Amino acid sequence: MKTRFIPLIAIVLLASCESGGTNTIERKTGKAISTISADSDLSPEEREKMEKDFQLEQKKRKALEASWTSLKFNKEVHDFGKVKADTDCFADVRVINTGDKPLIVSNVSASCGCTMPRRPKGPIAPGQSDIIQVKFHSKPGQLNEVTKTVTVEANTKQGKHTFDIRAFVEE
Image 1 (cartoon, rainbow, N blue to C red):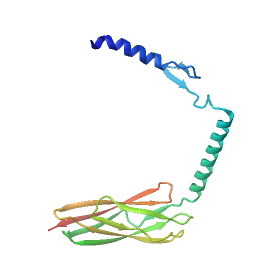
Image 2: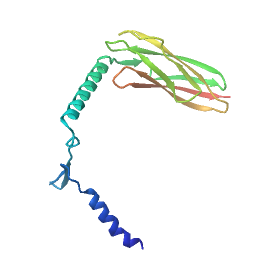
Image 3: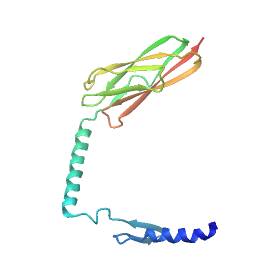
Image 4: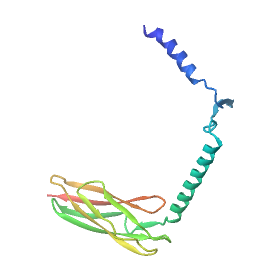
């Protein structure tokens, strides 16, 4: 029964591939190349609107890129060493604006609820720095080597930067 439907499905699929548009298929050096014109059915008004929208998006992107700066941390990893379970540990990681525009840290988050980072309050001037304070509190039963990642979102080309905190949790 299934074998009767296979030719029917193949015919339907082949028929659905045909179109009256400007699709062309060429064969060059063993590779199939397809050219499809996405806007071939647009009116001149629609094309003009698309072009204006595209130019507006380009302007927005250039304005965003003009506000980008760069950053670095004074350390990529903070190691608390040996800590007692169920205690608070604090670390200060310095974020340095290495660019020529104000650095705006929009968000700081951690990979786990046991790690609570606090972002700098305002913009960081070029060449200046500020502190990201991180509180680590191991959960009950969370023993041995622990590594957590802190993610910093800022107005840089990369957008997101990370550093790690480590601890060896003992009872």
